[in-house]
Image (cartoon, helix red, strand yellow):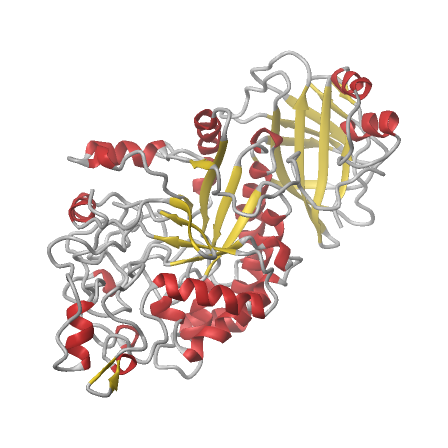
Length: 572
């Protein structure tokens, strides 16, 4: 259970006669609150008996500051062991948290959040008094709310579809790269996902914006309307057990590091009341849970790495923890990655996938209420809608399902899969109001190779291959696919059960390098990104279909970007 102390709650309780944050504030209450020079919200988010994680939000009700320091003392033997978004020093029981270089500015009425891990023995009482730059911040008696663990001052009111009636954040870093390309200004104002794919991405680097910088930029773009910010949360231990190009920085057993150094700092920032007016959409850990369904055990596609992650449970635990921590923040909408039709559309994958998603969504303190929906086709190429054939067609008495391309799958495109999988997810216990997202950033398949109608009826393979929009060699090919094009532009509520078409994968960012490139990002070389590779069981031992001369995953790939624009459908 979360424990908290918040100065503002005391004022509310005195005036309104009730405790907790969800009360109407009379004018006299507002006057009482404004007289408080500062408030401190100290929450113990996780306590495992010998240690704990805390999140602190400080609100300044006095003049604006260019630097700040918060102090408190412990009644017990608590010791701060690691921290983020502040510099923390401790002498005995006395603790001082001061700003980092990037968050020293604290406006009048503004807030700043930071977090830390600590150790203790005996009891772990919440501190009773805080100061901000030497001025005492009022604190209540602990009887007020805080049961959710880090709600961060949001309104607490979620909408059914966060994309409805809202603008979506345009990442200025991606936009600048797109605009610098010949013809790129045609799409450089489109919203794309911000990828938090390693711990360093949270605070940013010398060449990239951190999470706070993106959220601040989103506030600037927001104006008086609603604004969605799209984040990809992607750094599980043993990440992407079946693909080397996107292997992550954390080893298979580093679940505690994932929780305390990745998820907790993200949650602390998103819970800052400064960002409560944003609708924050998170795509949770792409490819992880689907790998446990299809690439484990006795299957021909199994890998030792995926068997390890199934056995140790750290994918399930990590996803559950992320859902619980982020789902506690009222303006965060979690969408869990659900692969794509060419991965989970087969009968022996479809229902088991829904079941393992339910397992993850009810682990580590998470519930199905922490899941706003699911996203399919993230960073993939599956066509949105195949119009030239259906799963019910037959050619000379042979079902389309028996074609080499379809290979007994029940779905031939992403829209039909996403709508059907939504129904399956609800059947296993997810809320009936969940919505689906489909990543359409690279599944347009336009250009001169786009079929104008069905293929010939000389054979079922000729019929399907001649009519399919998706021109990949095999549906299992996923790396920098030759011939791909931009798909439907991002839009809200485009079809039944679909919350939005999104460009979660920023077009022009590589899926992986065509050959081994030494790097400090934990990214390995995957042969599926080598255009000369002849395949494996996961792609039917087919050629990889990858473009040549690709850089590391996430790095800008100009040749791919130009091809995506040339083959866009709808055309640019």
